[in-house]
Length: 245
Length: 245
Image (cartoon, rainbow over all chains, first blue to last red):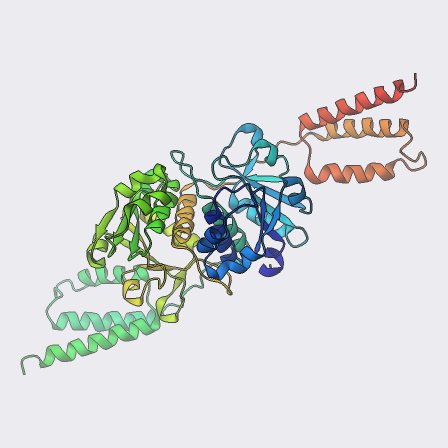
């Protein structure tokens, strides 16, 4: 999935935001995730200096490109897929998607369609009237006891999920472990050293070795790490033999 | 996975944060995701009023519980798993996990261990010296061109991923569709209506019906929606028969 051709079709639409600082923070958050289009509806009077302070100078280009509209009809007219966001999950307002599920759909659709992510005012959120424009409604998971996300934080989560959905699946590359022969060579050397310094019980030398084997196996060992440990053991054995001479 | 027993073992550790407002925003973000423990290291002088303004009064309880430490050794001493965050991905600083991968491990470990999420100062982030304490290092995915996340936004993403990882997997419940017999009844009725008003070509009535079938099949129909459509068709047929009489 090509990230840029997707994110250029995605816009953040802020409906009647109250605080200029939040719009600035939204610009910065969105830009980090490659989303540079912001639309502001019904809030032409926001203080530019406050906006700029929170966007930081690094995201001022996003602020400069903001499109302002007076009414929501005109603002949304050209979009082909509109996603609303809400914390209030009344039955008539759903069905609700999660940011993750909806992000997958958005990334797919945005290859050919203009997508709007619609956010309501900080205090009240989107009313049912605005949700009617939406093809999908998202609610961000949060604790039952406390649901009061800052506007820019809500935007951040949506944009982060969308950006993540454009990335190839991140299965961390597995490490390449040392071969059994390398490990057994190391264990033999450790056992010899521990026997030499009198740490192992000659009746049952395997007892402590078993604990060490478990410990090493838990995390796994790289070839290079086996070599480092063997180097240390060699040096320890040398030091032990020479200590009193 | 029980969310609460997990999140109570998780703390946000802010190393030398510069702006009180960011600490307030962090408190609010974390509380939304059920994380109420914040530790501040090397920054005892932060202005409480600024902190409170951005936490909003709703998260003041989290601010009141903040633990302050002068040095990072003492601050981290009791944690059993420490996750560092960084935007700078030098080779010696990794290997790096994604928030999603690491969140799964954190949720598992936090059932029995105290986990710290360590964040550096706003301008420089964590230095190698602080990363040395960490069992894992996370980097938040962002565009190559612009990497400048606000501190509270970075905390938000980590906490959101952790909270999401405590939830049961969200496969949206599938809708229960109308049965074929219901659909065929509806199509027959539509066809009859369209024939009656002269919309269908009597030579090939199936032509437009095929388009309508495709359209209805794309989104799927519930039983109730089939009934609503049939009700509308019945009323339309009635109106068509009575219009000129």
